[in-house]
Amino acid sequence: MADCIQVAYQRGLYDHIPLLLNVDDANWGPRPLQMLKCWSDYLGYEDFVREIWSYFDCHGWGGYVLKMKLKMMKTCLKEWYNQHFQNLDRMSEVKNKISLVDSKAEMSALMEDEVQELHDLSVNLHSLARTKNSVNWQKSRMNWLKEGDANSKFFHGVMSNHHRQNALCLLSVDGVGVEGVQNIRAAVYNHFYSHFKARGVDRPGVENLQFRKLTGAQAGNMTKPFSLAEVK
Image: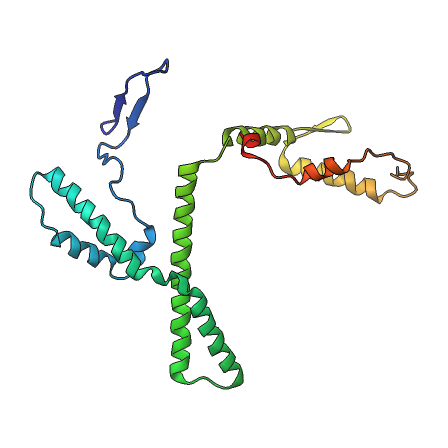
C-alpha cells in the first residue's frame, strides 16, 4: 500500500518493539484544541471563529504563529462559551412558561401571538435539551477516558466466560442431535409444553424441604456497598 507508514519505537522496558502503523499518509497527529461538539451547532459560531482568527496579529515562523493563535483562541472561546451557553440552566424556566401557556389554552383559545410564543418556547426547549445532552455525553466520555473503569478487563472476561458456558450449541432429543437456533428453540418449547400440559403427574413440592438461612449479619452483608479495594 502506497499510503501505509510503519514506525518502530524503542523497546524500553518490554521484550518487544512497539510498532505504529498508519494507513493514511496525511496523519495530522493529535488534535491541538479541545472543544464541545455542540458549539458547532450554535448559530454564529463559525463566523465568530473566523473573525477572531483573522483579528489576531502574530509574527514569527509558522509554528510559533499557530501556537499563539490557538492559545489566544482558547481564551476567547471560554468567554464566548460563558456568554452563549450560560442559558442551559434556563430549561426549568422555559418549561414553566410552556406550562402557563398550556394552562391558559385549556381555559380559552390562544391569541396568534401566544401561539407563536408557544412554538418559540418549544423550539427553544428542544434546542437546550439537545445541547445539554451533547455536553453531558461528551463529558461522560471524557471522565471515562480520564478515570477509566477499574478492573474492566477482569469483569469483561467473566462475562465472556459466562456467555460461552450458557450457550446452547447442541441438544440431544430422543437420541437425535438438534443444532441451530430455531431448531433448539423449538425443541425446548415442545419439551416444556408437553411437560406442563401432562395431567395426573406426581410433581415434587417444596413443603418438606429444609433450607439454610442467613444470619442477620450475613443478610446485612448482601446489601453492603463494594469498596474500591474489593473491586480492584
